[in-house]
Image: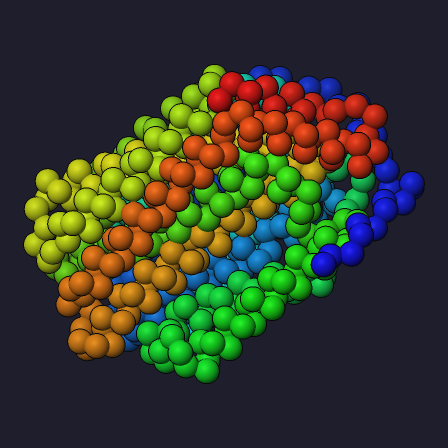
Length: 512
């Protein structure tokens, strides 16, 4: 059993300082636009790269598992470092860390475009992830501290979600066009001008902010997190080649389980943990974390499976495949800001239920009708359903993650939500890729998936069903009560004399 939580020394207790002079409405919108630019390059990179996977496979002569590592090398490193980056930004300055992230991400993108082989590409993707870990959670923390009024924040988060939709709409088409014109390396060139522009604008317009009290580093927790994620994902990716009962896969599972137990025990004893387990006393926060894992596992698996299906099974070129994904992306673009407005006005319940329904329906439709020559009308319907579902899910995840939390912990809370997204994406690619790789191992080809493709769609349908059930359970009256009690607990135990401005965000939860 975990030991008692170490008491917080009196000198570490703090009172949040008086907020600085508020920014003008135009300046706040400019800050939001700059933060969204960082999200755009990260999201464009991911969506465009999925369309380029078959081209990478042919050019670098790699296997399905090699393609999985091209995607998961990024998401694993990102997931492992997000909370560290969020806490570091709270400690030494959010704008400073944000600028570091932009610089490293741009350099990593250049190295990706120059990679001579699979190993070099995977390593450069890991470097990209180091920079990416300093972008999205830190940008969300900047937004949280810029938009302090709950409804205004919910709308800003809706815009943030809309950028995800924009990247989905532009990413596959842009990626397909670049691959057809110049090859997969050109996808990484797009990040350079956008990243440089964001860096210059950040230096000029984004104000510096930090938490009133520095959080101490947690290297042990960070190491345990890395061991957990890498061992779990490696075991899943390699399972088709070695077998589920092989010593390698069983060892990876055992190491992951031990790392998880050690992480929970160690973090529960720390006064300033990497993962503040008190956050999970709030059912909405815990639910948002689990929903993020399930929803982004669905997205990661969907993009991986669909990109290879359209090009390897249907024989489309990269641009044609990108155009076929446009209905899904367009629905995400439309429904993400709508979800933000609904969350601000009525709370997260309705968007979460809609998200789970749409994603489940899409998975079931494809599982029941899966074939090599699936009718284009069925493809269109399934992509629209998935796009609506995913478009509705992002705003309630983010808003719930930061609602009720003191602003001093905004970076950590936002980073937990972002970490959950990346963990989900890694697992989705790993699981779906493992299912597909098992077909390739048995048949020797990438296009003859047969029943294994149907199994992959049922897995994705299960992800959507989990979003639906968790959304219903964690957005009701009981869940709202746990969120309010957790907010009071955090305020009392951290020694604050009054709720921070974020405490008002609980009003949005009450409206669900």
